[in-house]
Length: 275
Image (cartoon, rainbow, N blue to C red):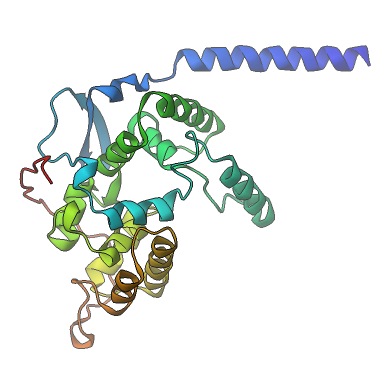
């Protein structure tokens, strides 16, 4: 019995030392309080580089200039409890663990919007326990130093929406030739549908036809937007009945695209903070 307790104490102290070493090398998220993260995509390496600037980039979109349906679509799709958790949603983690154990693989994610933001800015995308612990710790700290609106604004401006497409301004211009403030509920649902795997799910756009998966996902997101009061019943019904602008008629439908198309250079306009 004494030997068992000794082993437990040794194990505890090893974990404690490891934890203390880990937190010494965590990135400092306080830089997000007064600097803008800038994502640069290298099409040759197919990788991104993050830098920080005290000067606001001309493509940066404030949260006030993003339509309510677009904000709502992302929240109900990616993190329904965004306004009630403190960076980590333990209920979703519990459900994810149950799903993973049942399917005997990593089948369900449980990352909040805050965690996704931290992963995109500060961490690599490797699925390791160390990276996940870092993500949880930094996310909890970010929730203490930034408002929910600031976290959302950062998220919309740095996440990927398609191959080589980073930031909501580039995304809405690329897919719909609109600014983020002009996006309709169905367009918002389409953009939110892209987020789990933007390169894969954006194939609907290039084929000019929604896949069965995309169509089902968009309808589910719209229903949840209605349930969460981001859109009203009239907006929901209209979104169900109207096609997206890029959808072709039956005689115009293009064959399915096997290879990912090269990203298109987009000339983005200057956006004012004024609504």
